[in-house]
Image (tube, rainbow, N blue to C red; front, side, top):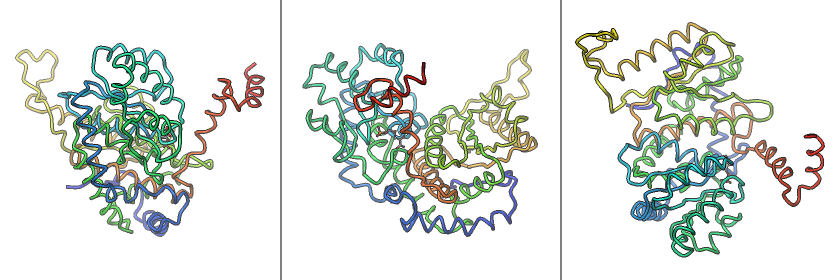
Length: 437
Ligand code: PA5
């Protein structure tokens, strides 16, 4: 009854695993001793054990306040400041929700903002603005717009009581603004980077507002911290996953496709892509993380996976128990010819699609790793989050990169600021304007 890796379809040999074992052990020692690259960002490793009770109580109190006074929580954040919360909320929330969570500030689309505004205009609203640096343009712009929206609706004083800021302990424009305005504030620990921050107030506050039990989520992560701390390939599922994907990468499989068969876990893949893409894609190296939702995408990307370039492998999130299902009934006339499925459930059909696709793709030369997950509840999702984080840290060290920085994301920002005419970017602006001409 645990998350476990099945690599029997990954087309790797026992000897290959044996050969990578010493490297896994070395990477483990680097991670756990805190002596590797980026070691000032290792706070996520012990986060499940280090969360303070007082902080958790404050999160729950604020979540209750928000749920009592608002129909809608607007979460303003981008990248690691929203993907974890969105992944957990979409994977776990049921349809009966009293407070809905909307995500804004993760794009620069006026059309998107307008659409959200018209949806929420007659509802009661609170805002959770999340930015570790406190200076990221996308959420800062959205916050300026929605702060005004709130003030027009409730006036300045009431608005302040409806705004919750999650940011750095001391730096950044958002910190300053929160202090000046007196918002309820949550701190993102210095040693936890954005993409590893879902188990801090960054993720926990919106998740709690959505009515999800954060204690169970954290308990799952705590268990994972125990289980995935063994320096052993045999007894550590997270390391097994990291090792197998690196063996495949070294053999020219540069693209990993994360596969799910349940639409509600779509955003787990989005979160995973950020975690792995930002952590590993640097120094001219790294597996390119991509994702598909099956069986939907079997009718689009399925063709490429079956017969396109053989530089891909798949990792399947296989949720054993869907918890909610539908039985297929017998039809008197059987005009659609589906009576052979009468008495079976949708999940039965879904699992057959999974098994059939697995064999087809393996026959087509695509190695498959299966991550078996008993069910998608708070406990197992907490575990899965930590599983992926630990595997990612280890995988980055196996690859020889710093998995905790993201220098590459600055490049577009510089150009955008210069093109927008931000003070301080005059020289670059001239250069870029010439290139655009
Ligand atoms: O993982 C990361 O560090 C990034 O994706 C950040 O989360 C993202 O850029 C948002 O940054 P901030 O929280 O500082 O606004």
